[in-house]
Length: 526
Image 1 (spheres, rainbow, N blue to C red):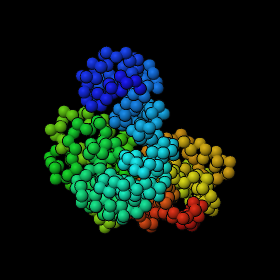
Image 2 (image 1 turned 90 degrees about the vertical axis):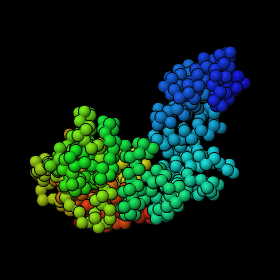
Image 3 (image 1 turned 135 degrees about the vertical axis):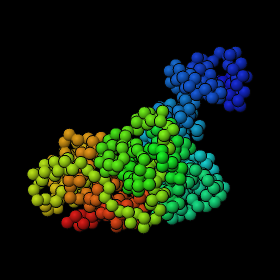
Image 4 (image 1 turned 45 degrees about the vertical axis):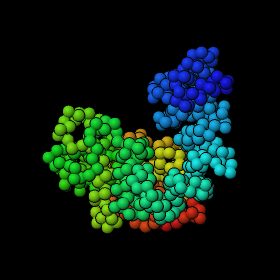
């Protein structure tokens, strides 16, 4: 970097923008660098739109301009556009390998793309010094956790706490890591942080899952509402933009029974079903209500709760002019703190509350039993999760599942969503007693998928939405959990599940082989 460029860059960093512009005007910098500096000045002035445009123009002229690529990566990272930032972050890191900021952003972008092993390799060299920066240690620990190396992550976090004993971020990272390995210890660390820094939203949100997993429901559900706050963002409980024009309500005492309340579904499908377990109780208190949710869930909700009208999120736009008649939006998850405050409240209220399309159920039942007369039908799902890390922590290989299919008078029915072409080929080649239903997109056509599940005699599944749907319909379910952290509602033990009447939890031990675990589960199917 030339001395003129260094001086301009220094002025920009100091916020002396007028002086920087004067020096830039009198310089003979190459067009790419001139645009990059102009973009940096615009960014300092808060004009992100102009800044991004100028950075992109600079990169178009010189794809390896470290100022343009590095600052563009930082800007996109702040805007949470990590996939878009990846290419620029990679270039900036390679051109300026000593720059820790570029390295951390590059690693974060890799992790966002489920390339955690590569992220670990990027950050590891920066942690070799006697006292690495706290940001680098925390970033490195996070990538190790993403790479399924929880114990290694703990070692790094313990070091961070030792080097920076008064830093809350180090303590919080330690609590988050222990949440997977030792929830009770994580709980103690979270409580210590809370005592020193009460009301910390990020800490409270992370702590909520630990408290709920340990079945401290009053504390857990209270903290769970932090996920609705803007500060938590998309990793929390973000509501669709179509209904954000309405007042957000999480306190039942704020509801006027003379006005309409929009009860909104939220989160993934499994959470939506779990939260619907208290919907009837809420409707008995506030009958003047409307359900707002995903299109694919509307028929099911309308059928299961006939006293309420179910509409898609888009319906919110039609109600904008009727806001004087509407209390606001009440997320269903926020009802839990009123109706499920103890283990006993779950046990007392276990009931079947989701109703499948009975005609579809009968259609599937007849069709399958024509090909498998007199056999027990077992619906199965072997993989779950959206992110790659979730899939690793929730899933078993289909080949391992195949080893327990040799049960007399049993026919397995695939209820697995997504691409199952490889599994179909394997099943055909090895003549496995499993049926794959053609022509139904299980992710989109919830009614058909749910009806097919209900046509089965029982369900064998990893932790995915299928367990919630089947459990809420009263089906017998054997839930298979890996040794890794599972969704909070399944607690920490084996045996009967808390929210559903006939869901049995089988939990793999850390020192237990997959085949041994699945053969143990097989005994319950015989």
